[in-house]
Amino acid sequence: MGIALLSILMAAFLLFWNELRSLMSLEKMDDYGMYEMTYYGDYGFDEFLEVGANNDADIEAFVTRRLLKGLPIDLGVTGDGCTAFVVKDENGNVLFGRNFDFTYAPSLQLFTAPDNGYASVSTVNLAFAGYSKDNLPEGSFFDRFLTLAAPFLPFDGMNEKGLAIALLAVPEAQAPYSFDKVTLNTTTTIRLVLDKAATIEEAIELLKQYNIYFSGGIECHYLIADASGHSVIVEYVDQELCVVETEAEYQIASNFIAYDGLNIGEGFTEFERYDEVENAIETNGGMLEVRQAVQLLAHVGVFDGDADKLQWSVLYNLTTGNGEIFANRKTNHLIEFHLNTDK
Image 1 (cartoon, rainbow, N blue to C red):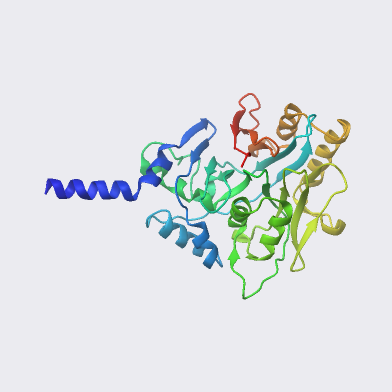
Image 2 (spheres, rainbow, N blue to C red):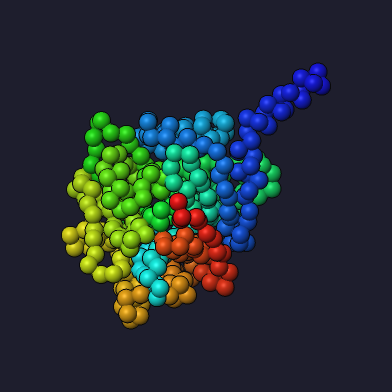
């Protein structure tokens, strides 16, 4: 009996080895509720791309079966005021800055390296996986277990080729739909781009190959940039994928539809935030030092009355693979990271 039990335990250990390694790598980076984790092994994204998902329940079912070994997950819906920009620093490095503004949301910086895709670092909103201020991924493996769904829940990220992408909510979006295409949701679209695209052109061609639906009806557009400094905003207008280019050496995205000068906003602070970023960049000769970019992110984070909505800010250096991330305007606690971009 003892030998049989030991054999079962050893088999279970081997079966869940990558999941255990991933959970063991989970570290708390900031008391606000910011974490870091490396996902080891295959998270089944190529398998997911064969079937996709027509709604959040489909994604929940896939993640439950493929990653969580039957433990159910209930995807939350989040979307509020965000700001992002692409600009060069004084050395010509391409910087991609991004704020995520919302009600309290713990975050996870996730490192992945799929066999059939590019390594990347991405930021995951853990509220999307069911975590909250009173339920954080700390303590036992069971308390951390839902973080294994993180590869399917990125809100922004950068891959080893120096391509970065971030989602931002907009008032409306109408994506095209084709019966012969697989459907992805808001966050798995980001995973697609991070895993499979090395350039803007590749990212756009990939996006055209899939339908997209917006989780919970929170419509979004995407700011995408690559190591060459090329950047675009991808929007879905009148059932077409539309690309917003810029003639400037920088690009800014906020919570309004920019295609063809539509400028359809939410009626909040989206235009003011855009103008503040543009003014800061123009005043500095069309570029920003890293320090300036960090301070600008903290400055344009959203306040709703007395409530500070800025959950995380991240600055990706698409040239070097370096970056800084910080929680809730804490510029005195920058967490540095590096992704190998030499491949």
